[in-house]
Length: 356
Image (cartoon, rainbow, N blue to C red; front, side):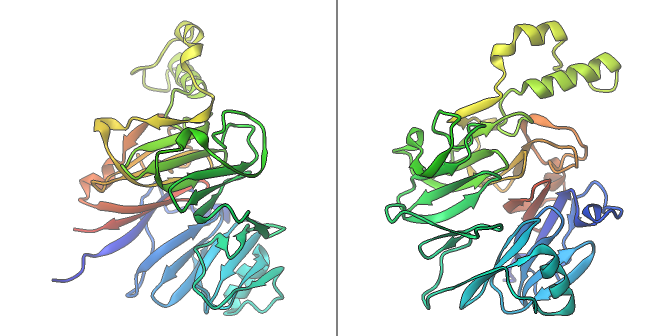
């Protein structure tokens, strides 16, 4: 029996738009894969690095540039970190883009670190610590933190421990650390509210966080200004009320201004402790990813749900409306596509699907 066909689709802010060119439209659009296919993606704001059967490839504004000899990427708008068999290197974004265009990264790297012979952990983890796509590029981890996965937000980091525990540190002014406070933490600290509930995955957005338990339950915490926690957002309710006042939006389930004033207590701007999120029909989750201010999950049944900031269509609902409720991406269901994985860029969502 032939293996099922797989493809990566994307919706939201495109590299073409970042370069000031016309974008591909509301999406989703298909990532050109060639005969070798695409196995992984690492998105930044203005470009994306993909892994094909031929190796890594940097894509920006319609151009495809090979990155031979590298196995993993950690991109940002200031630097691109690449890991190969013998070491990890960082180049300035401009040098990486021009070097890839010429077929080789000839400029001296801004940072480098050699690796031991044994297989390294997945980026951004490195032996003894982790990499960041901006100076100082490497931070040591305490020996007591045995991380099997690490993710980076705009100002914070989350580590998934060997036993499924979650550690969080960095900036905390939006509650993104989950410690119940709005203070920073300089060192990894156990998220005690999740203690005793083994986690299988963690995700960090701009200023919010998420984790999935081994049972498939989803926990969220941090900033909810754009509804990125799928909890009631006052900013979105006020936006809907404004649309109702001007007659530009739907009045369905839209509270009037008097209701908003009376229901302030029901809105959540910051969720400083992890909150168990009830998805429609008690769905179990297999994957989660966070953008700057939006969130996407894949259910164990192969469906995609998204919520949060939607200005660039990154939620996949065919519009630019933000949402503080988890909504299924109906286009994928209508096309008979089973979702296997999701990776959010800052304003974009990349989805790996199994085609019928």
